[in-house]
Every structure is written in structure tokens, then in C-alpha cells.
Length: 149
Image 1 (cartoon, rainbow, N blue to C red):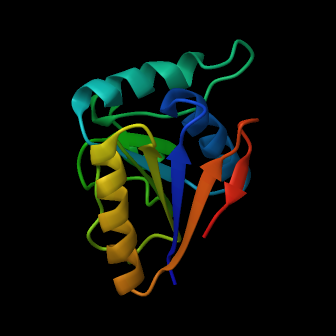
Image 2: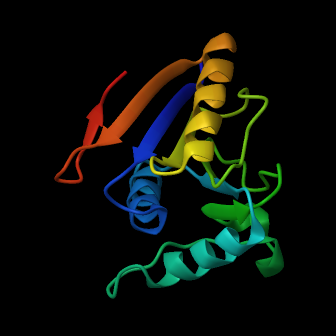
């Protein structure tokens, strides 16, 4: 059964939260694909993953880089998963219609954006109807994640 997690971003922006989640994914020995709803965000994430910390970077690539099958983290605006990732991160309006083939689906959405909230609600319903195990996480005032549902 696919596990679907919803992360409601309120205290920190995506470019601060995503690298930490990707690090945890790689530490578990999993590969990931990050699907963005737009090209501008994809380019910004590409840059951010190389520079988010002075002492580290996250190995990743895009279609422009080639060798997608070799990338531990693959960034895209499309449906492709050339690295065989078991985890998909959906950001900025990216959606997933078929949950099969992934161990984990992670939706990251801006809690201050009404359109993003509405999309998350629709995606929650679709995941539940597909029989996925669904959880909802929200940041508290200290920036820590609390499971709410």
C-alpha cells in the first residue's frame, strides 16, 4: 500500500523544508523524484539543492543533465521517473493520478495559499479513494512537524 503524506508548510518555505526531507529519504537508501508544477520552481530547486548548506549538497539532476537513471534525486515537471524512485515529492501544483509504483508520495503545500490548500484537499480525497494510507503533518510554532491526521 502506498503511503501518502501531506506537509502543510506554514513556518518555513519549501526550499528550506524539501532538502531535509530529501536527505532523510536518501539516508534510508531510497531514490526520489521531485515533480514541480512549473519550470521556474524546478530551476530554483535545482540551484537550492546544490547550495542549501555550506558543508553539503544533495546529489540530483534534471532532464537537461542527462543520465536520469543515475540520479538519486531527479527533478522534473513531467510524469517521468527515470531513476526508478520509490518516493515522489509533489510541489507547486504537481499532481499524481496513479499511486501504484511508489512506496511514498509526499505533497508539500503552502498553508498561506488558498489555491494550494484546495488542491491538497482534492489530492487527500483522491489518495483516500485509491486506498492509500494517508497522513497529514503541520508545523508548530517551533517549526517541528506534528501529525494531525
